[in-house]
Every structure is written in structure tokens, then in C-alpha cells.
Length: 150
Image (cartoon, rainbow, N blue to C red):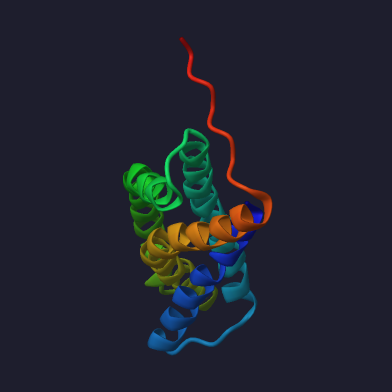
């Protein structure tokens, strides 16, 4: 299921680019460092949703039901991580003084990238899972349900 995770990565870049345009900052080395950081955290969030959906699917739930349950179960932890991360980089985004330009560039890329990934990732990652899993099952067949312990 790595394709579901990989396809959700551009969502982190969209938020970062929108934030840079909104604040009138250029795309430089510092914003690229911020994007690399965002890609890692965005992939982690997507991976958690996909893993939970895969486990639910293997328990015999439908594809859409498994994706919805995974998104519901991971909503709170992802939002808590995102909020902590967003508030943590807020001082960098509004920095002033020596070296402030580089701090603002990294802070802005990470701040807006995290917002974009948290909002868009929670919606599109389950959708991508449903589409890719449906294609996979059409080609390879449905997974077997886990045997119940009796």
C-alpha cells in the first residue's frame, strides 16, 4: 500500500506553496528544508491511516468502511500532532532580528504545509486508499479475513 501514502505527499507541498505566496516569500533553500520536514510528517500521518484501514479491511470490513474507520480513529492523534507542530513553529514564522529571514522561510513553509496536510490529508488519504485498494482487489482479489479466535 505504499502508493496510497506516496500519493498523499503532494498535499504537504500545496499548503507550503500557498503560505509562501500568501506571505510574499520566495522559494529558497530554507523553504526546501521546511518542505522536507513536512513531507516526513505528512507521510507518517498517511501511513497511519493506511495501516489502520488495511487492518480493518483484513478483518472483513468493506473498503470504504475500513477507510472511514481508519480516518475516524486517527483524526484526534493527527490533529493533536498537527496543532502542536503548528504552534511550535509559530515563533519561527514571525521571527525578527538576526537570521530572521531564514527562520521566517522555514517557519512559513512548515506552518502552512502542516495546515494543508492536516486538512487535506485527512480527507484525501482515505479516498486514495479506497481507489488504490479497489484497483488492487480487482486485479489480485480480496484479502482473506483473519480467522476468529474461538
